[in-house]
Image 1 (cartoon, helix red, strand yellow):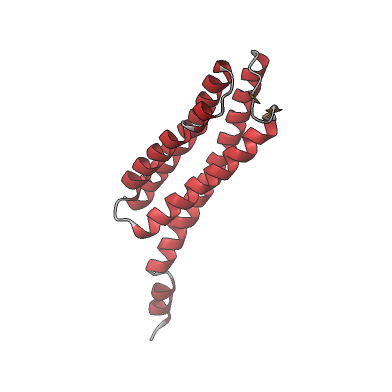
Image 2 (tube, one colour):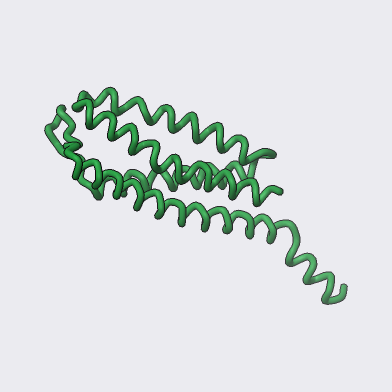
Length: 148
């Protein structure tokens, strides 16, 4: 066996799969930071406009860092879903889009159940859509680019 064959074996299909995976994860983490920032800024703007973000059951107010933490957590969950689909689906971008839109729709239910003021409910609905508007297109494009 010569050295050319050794190099070809080392840079085979597994290497390409790892490169695609790392590219998706890197893109996803940058998008996660962007989604966290934009969502927190939107929450701060809503608060400045008079939205209290008070949940009546416990009388607690959702703090601004809470928006960043929850957005970050669920955005990373989205990156994990995208990575799993990249690995195990023949059409990961299509399935990710469907899954992410369905999960976003489900996430719109809890604000209605919280019993908060109308302005708070509307703001929370918008704040669910903000990170979705960042994450879904970014990860879908990234999946398309990595499977083309």
